[in-house]
Length: 299
Ligand SMILES: NC(=O)c1ccc[n+]([C@@H]2O[C@H](COP(=O)([O-])OP(=O)(O)OC[C@H]3O[C@@H](n4cnc5c(N)ncnc54)[C@H](O)[C@@H]3O)[C@@H](O)[C@H]2O)c1
Image (cartoon, rainbow, N blue to C red; front, side, top):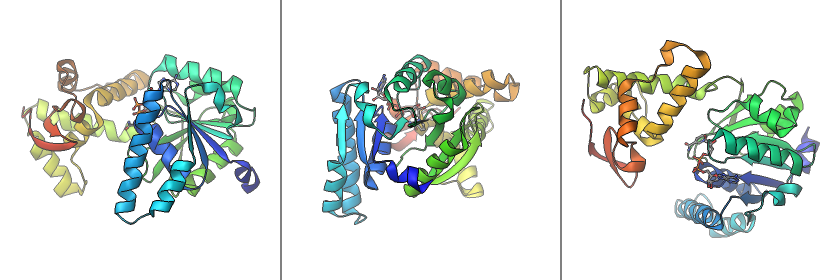
């Protein structure tokens, strides 16, 4: 196995938004050449700025030296042409969470990459098995679900599609360990484990507000000071984005056809109003520069 891992020199990262730029940074951080691909040069430039900022922060905290930061930057290359991924030895896809876009990217990657190259998708909610089929190499396809922010969070859910081979799983697990992250093996199922456990809790917390049981601060304080959660569920829902929370609840609801996954009507209403949390400056809380400044919706 280490032999196969040893042959991996160049990583392709497709989609360089919030997750993709973090994924590119961590692979370049352990010495891989990384090709970042997006649809527009301005998106690649934005990703590069974001990586530079993150590296500067690490230098400031004396986690790495300026020479280390420069070396990481020098290992990054960029392209707006998916075909340039042809010489990559392992690919992580982190394009927008949209069925059509993902199916198209995986179909094309399946044609472009050498047959033995493994594709990992960072999707949070789309079936790994379905994307694997689109790639035409289901045995060489796997879920590689990083958490946000990628350079900080240790977990990578490694999700086996129906036809993922043992070798593909082992390659992905070994690479994850090289990144000094913790791979957790799970099987393909709506929401995997992370979102299946987390989102119903956030949804239930919102139901407490909806039913007038408590306000956002009170719900969060119960979970912070009673259950040792570093961030309360309402603040976390705002931080993730209420639109994303709703989309994932709908994936669980549609996937299992079980009423226990029904999105709370207040969550739906907040999304309809455009109060999405941190990203719009208003959700259950008011936000400025990614920090809570007050309560917006108290029930
Ligand atoms: N944001 C999170 O907290 C989070 C956490 C875990 C997993 N994810 C998953 O990671 C993936 C990316 O999410 P994100 O938050 O980084 O999204 P994002 O919107 O920040 O970035 C997506 C990027 O993909 C690019 N893109 C779109 N179509 C493309 C194409 N055809 N080819 C190349 N690039 C293309 C976009 O231009 C954009 O830069 C999604 O599948 C999401 O579900 C997100």
